[in-house]
View 1 (spheres, rainbow, N blue to C red):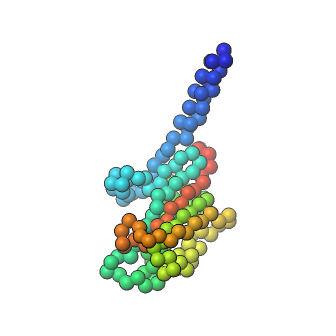
View 2: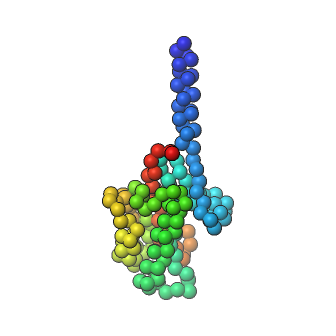
View 3: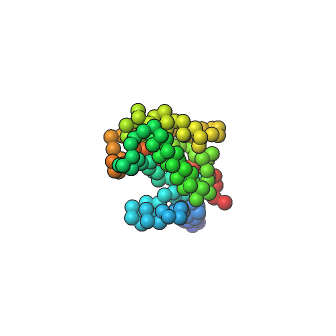
Length: 154
């Protein structure tokens, strides 16, 4: 009798766990990224959507001016927003943001200013900004990853 109850409990735990299976979100045009790097642009696990790092870059033929930084940072935030939307969420659902910056002092204030255009609703998410020596390639200077809370599976 007790053994049956224990086995039933474990079976129910297993069913509960499978109800929160992972779901990948791949915006149109990012299928190559998913296959080449074996990484989902976004993945839902339970009540959270995890967005892979989205990078900002300045081409090698461009000067690293304040305008170039601003344009690239805004484009990066817009691409994060696109992935959030693909996953059925938005900036207002973001609970944590981590940003990685090469030469942070060169674009720190610009980054904060652009960030304020996208992160507009209370409560604001937790945020950690990290200065790094280098990202994946020399053209990259910023990377943003976020976690959004989407609530219980519907």
